[in-house]
Amino acid sequence: MSVNGITNAASAYSTYAATSKPAASKAENTSAETTAQKAETSVAEANGVVYEPSAEATNGTATKKYKPDAELIAKLKADSDARTAQFKSLVEQLLTKQGKTFNTANDIWSILSSGDFTVDPATKAQAQADIAEDGYWGVKQTSQRILDFATALTGGDPDKIEEMRGAFQKGFDQAKEIWGGELPEISQKTYDAVMAGFDKMAEDAGIITEA
Image 1 (cartoon, rainbow, N blue to C red):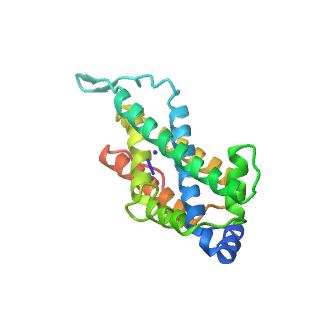
Image 2 (cartoon, one colour; image 1 turned 30 degrees about the vertical axis):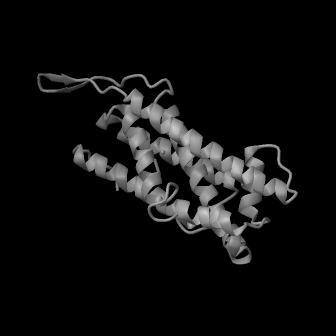
Image 3 (cartoon, rainbow, N blue to C red; image 1 turned 90 degrees about the vertical axis):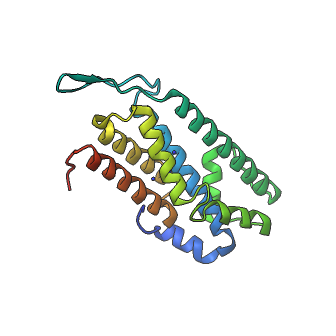
């Protein structure tokens, strides 16, 4: 939950992209989905998963309570789960038809990152639409979902911004580990967009962050 680049792709991905152009959009789509899912999970874990209200914030004589937006959290999670299940099913069918064997989700990511598969025109077109500038797994929407998820979890508590930033960083690192190295360019751009979003939150809240 973009939910918001992530540096240049590592040599493994560069080799894959150069030798398997037809598969690039599907692999980037997978990377974007994996990054967002891991980031959202880590953001949730950082806030205790149970979505407990954060501590009260006092401004002069006024006391404000920051309460998680349970309705928005549920909506974002349901949407992400549905999209992830739909995408996973599509990939499983694609790989099964090509005689690929896998036992876990990590096996699927490993196959996709290797580029050892082909994509039919219809699937490729859908993947390209999904990771387009305004696509569901594109930089803009993915980074915004991640920022919205973080805000919903903390109730907008400015004291939680850096904690959420750290959680996103953790999720991103986990996504790289699952992918088996540096992620594709779209993930780097999503990372940059999310970090810029946290910077803007901190600036609006009058928080000075380390350079």
